[in-house]
Amino acid sequence: MLSLYSFLVYLVEKVLPLVALFSPKIKLFVSGRKAVFANLKAKLAPSDKTIWFHAASLGEYEQGLPVIEAVKKQYPSHKIVLTFFSPSGFEVRKNNTVADVTVYLPLDTKKNALQFVSILKPDLVFFIKYEFWPNYLNELKKQCIQTFLISGVFRKNQVFFKRYGGFYRKALETFTYFFVQNESSKNLVQSIGFNNVMLSGDTRFDRVVAILERDNTLDYIATFKDSKTTIVVGSSWPKDEQLLINYINNAATSIKFIIAPHNIKTEQIATLKNLIKRKCVMFSEKENQNLADFDVFIIDTIGLLTKIYSYADVAYVGGGFGHPGVHNLLEPATFGVPIVIGPNYSHFSEAIALVHLKGCISISDSISLNECLDTLIANNDERVEKGHICSTFVQLNKGATNRILNYLLS
Image 1 (cartoon, helix red, strand yellow):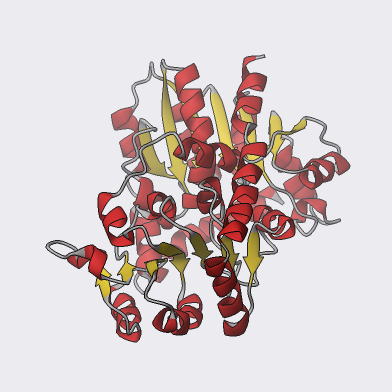
Image 2: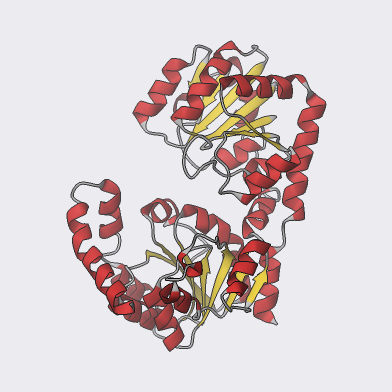
């Protein structure tokens, strides 16, 4: 089975350059991998000690960051090597400061795995949440390298738990230890014979708790807010915006809106701005403007949303009308902000929990959206109560990073 898998990956490796001719994302996927081994040899000396972290994309990177930072402090003489599978992760975080070397992970062929692991010779390896690459895992096992899964999530419908999943179950044998997010994941791993598993929790909570310790001040956001009730719309998609536009256009002048779309392509931003009938300014045109005079602020850049949430009285988090669903709720939650989302959130345990606890409200259409926002705006006590539920939820779930580190040091 491993031979068949390896052959299929080999075929994919040969076909992708052709696909890249028609897809900008695949082009990045292919071109970014061309110089991986040369980059590693240039940046790593044979005598260097290394620790390797692998993240599928941006979300997994953010999830693993508290552990990367903690391990870096604990092992200061080691170089941290960070790999990404997806361009959406690598292109955004290729210039991060936590890793000494950041590269794409070459495709999972036997040849690539042998060459990659032989260059790194890592003392420890961490795969974040997902990503189970059999050839890499087998090579790590052959070379007796300790390998860990952190913030792991397992579901019944995964191949590991099917009758025909023996090949992938065997790949799991390479892990030294599994650190999983929830009890159901722990039970599933144990159900197929693995007892080297700990319910450590989700390291994303540690990540967002740490946000509170930094300076989140943005003077221009404070000027725009002007002490007025402000709704922050984060990571919105067109479907979210379609529902919100009517509300924004008809809201009282005492209410302000900040919109940070998920996609900041020029044409989509222009379409959004044209639909807004109130005084609207974009981040890219904010210079020499009296921001307090505007009602709507469109953030047509990236990297600011987390800090902007600290100014929110209510947060609408987008993605809940698409698949797999809603974006990151924990960032507004850590600031004690009540949250509104769309109906698709069943893949996200924190969303399920916060809806159940009533710190987060799920809406399904414009009517329920309008009712929800009207209630939150009119009732300060309800906003405070729901916000407190959100911040308490985050605080009660922190600590995964320390649990992982305590195991490594025991």
